[in-house]
Image (tube, rainbow, N blue to C red; front, side, top):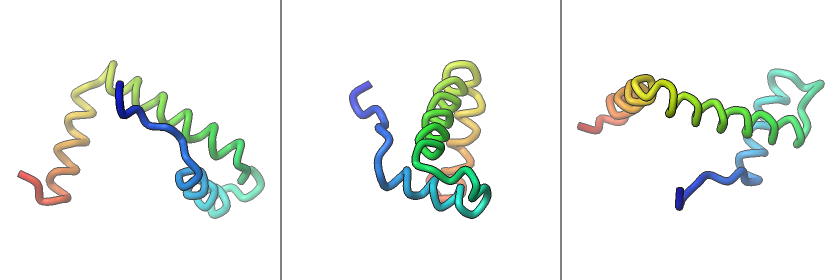
Length: 68
C-alpha cells in the first residue's frame, strides 16, 4: 500500500491529550503509540472482515460532509 499510514508526533500528541483527559494515570507516549497501533490494526481488521461497516462509515462521512 503506497500511502500507508505512519504514526507521527502530531497524532501521538492528540492521543496524549485524550489520555490526559480520560485516564491521566496512564497518559504516556508509550500508551498513546500502543493505542494508535491498536486502532490501526482494528481498522484494518474491520476493512477485511466487515467491508460493509467500512462502506457504512464512508456513507455517513459523505452525508456529514455533504458529498454526493
